[in-house]
Length: 205
Picture 1 (spheres, helix red, strand yellow):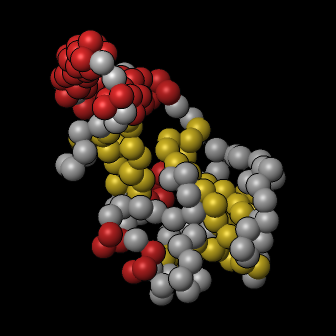
Picture 2 (spheres, rainbow, N blue to C red):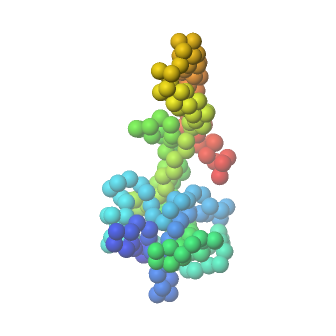
Picture 3 (cartoon, one colour):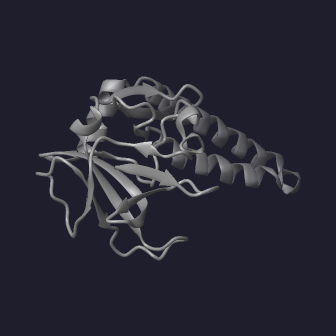
C-alpha cells in the first residue's frame, strides 16, 4: 500500500482499485480492536518525519481494501468512510485502519513534554521511521478554574484607580489566596508520574 500527499496539503491519500481516497484518520489495530489513532490524516512523529518529507510517498507492507465496517480479524489494511463528515477539499475522507503487526507497532512510552509541564506525550513507535502516533494527555484540569478567577480578578484590578483602599486590599487578599491554591495544584500536577498518566489514558480510551 502506498500513501501519498498533494502539494501543500498534509493529509495522506491512498489508491484502492485505482481510485484515490483522502485519509482523515489513521488507526492501528489488532484482533482485540483499535490500539491507538492519530486523530488526523497523517502521522505526527516529529518535524523531521512530517509529510513535507513524504512528498515522494510512503510504502507500507500491506494491501488496502475498502470496507463498510471495521473488521479486526483482517491481517491487511482497510479504509472506511468517516461517518457524518463534510465534503473536504478533495471529497469525503476515510479512516485508514492498519494492523499493528504490519508496522511492528511498539508498546506506548510516556514522557512529560519538554517545553510544557501541563501535558505528557504518549508515543507509539513502529519499525518504520516516522510511522506511529503521538498523543497529548493534559494534566492541568484543576488549574483552569483558578486561572479563570485570576483573570477576572486582573480585570477588576485594571480599574483599581476607581476603587477605595479597602477594595484594593480585598483584591490583594483574594489574589494571595488564589496564588496559594494555584501553587498547590501546580505542585500536585508536577508530582504526576508517567505510569499514572498511562493508566488514565488507557481508562479513557
